[in-house]
Length: 396
Image (cartoon, rainbow, N blue to C red; front, top):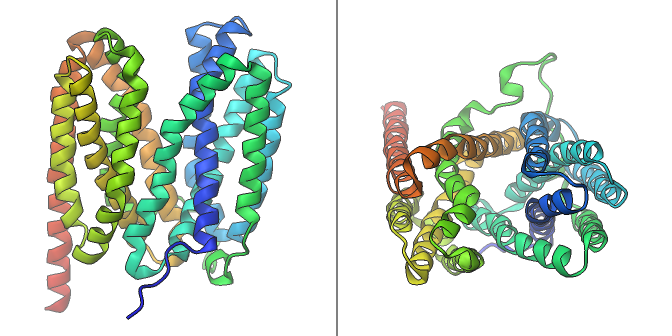
């Protein structure tokens, strides 16, 4: 029997859109604070406010995005969001005041939430059911690549070419995003709005209850990862390894890329437990090693273990969240998953920062983050046991 095709033009278009959207965001994360502090005369607080404005926009609009995506023609919505994204990036070229930067970052967060949720929902819908775990794994890889390449590109451009070149480059990426979103017309079965059965609003318009458990579990994984993403520059500096931080993310991403085909196929062929339980074990081991790093070899070994574990867990929970809901609710299911991630990473920055300040980074990573990972594994076991018991009761 011939294997169903995974890399269709439709899937490539949605993955490309996602890559460019996240690339722009991670370029901003690294380079915008430099622009604010060196050109606009702001400080750390003002630079942080720009990130906060983005997060407020994203977290506020993420659940609204899910309902909107399921209610209208999905690809048309993505095209409109991509056009708005292009206009926002163009406006940054003319923004020379902190108030304008904050306003644009707030709008950027709103459009980012809408566009990335739409791209992820449509990518999941165009995948063959028998290869959905593998496909969503590859889709998530576009985010991982942007996470590594974005900061490096942003710092290189602003450091060597200046602010104007940075914002013009971001405008170019936004134009490519618009092209990728509309390069191929998606099937009507994918883009058509879901039937509207009732008027008015309820909580289920914004949150998919069937996707809530895997979304919360995925959020806890990202909470632990948020400790790395947010504090690794400071942790590496305390170890005298600040120049090697980029190498950490290169190894982290490389391991995800190399293991993704195997993990995706194993998920589809053996079920989620075959990748999730080993993923938890390797992720926890990597976090323990990361807490005890003293040199470059330890840093890169921890990056490899963390990349392997996180690379198994992240796409698994996204797949479980999407598969838990019917196709007509793909937008809300995807929004539920990403909303959990947005909140978890934000909470990680807030809560783990306090732990690190009082008890140190080694305790934060080796004890708190590791216990979060192990506790999440226990919650996953309980959830899967409950699922199996429900299926047994239905058969009986």
